[in-house]
Amino acid sequence: MRRDPEVIRVYSRSLLEAVEPTGKLKEYLADAETLRKFYLANPQLQAFLEGPHIREQNKDALVDAVFAEGRILPMLYNLLRVLIDKKRVVNLPNILHEFYELGQEELGNVVGEVYSAVAIDPSRQRALTQALEKVTGLNFSFDFMVDENLLGGVLVRYKDISIDGTLRGRLRGLRASLETMV
Image 1 (spheres, one colour):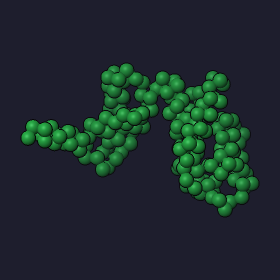
Image 2 (cartoon, one colour; image 1 turned 90 degrees about the horizontal axis):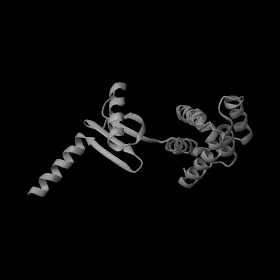
Image 3 (tube, one colour; image 1 turned 180 degrees about the horizontal axis):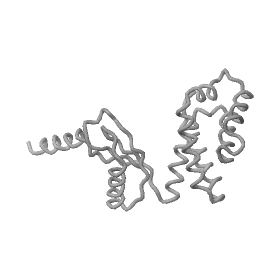
Image 4 (cartoon, rainbow, N blue to C red; image 1 turned 60 degrees about the vertical axis):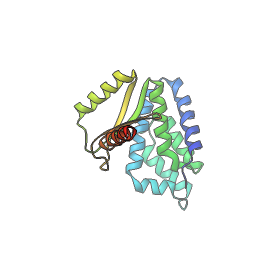
C-alpha cells in the first residue's frame, strides 16, 4: 500500500475543521501526536492494521480493544476506524503529523525539525528555539533529531525553509565564495 499525499492532505484538513469548533484543539493535537508515536513504535500493530490479508472485523476488534472507552479522543478514534474501513490506514501517521502541524499553525506555532550530529541538551534546545523565534518573529515547536551523517552544527527546517548551519553547509558556502573570487 502506498502513501497518498492527497489523502493525507484531505483527511488532516478535515480533522482540523472538525476539531476546531470543539475548543479542544490542544488536547487533540497532544492525543494525535501520542497516537502517531504509539503507532510508529509498534510495527506489529502496523502490520496487522495495514495487512490486506487480515479481515476487517479482526482489525475493528483490535482497535476497539486497544483504543475504545476514551483511550483516545473520539474524533481520532473515528478517524482510525474510517481509515481501516477505506483501506487507507497506511496513511495514519502522515495524516496525524500533518494535522499536528496544521493545528500548531492555527495556534500560532510553527512546527519544524532540527538535525544535529549529536543530541542537543534541553537548555541548548531552548536557547536555539528562542534565538530563532527572536530572528523570525515566529513561535516554534521543534523536533530535535540526531543525524549521524552531519559533521557538526545544525540543520533547521520549517515550512519550506532550510537553515543550514552544518559544517558541511559552511564549507559549501566557503567554497562558493572562493570560486567567485577566482
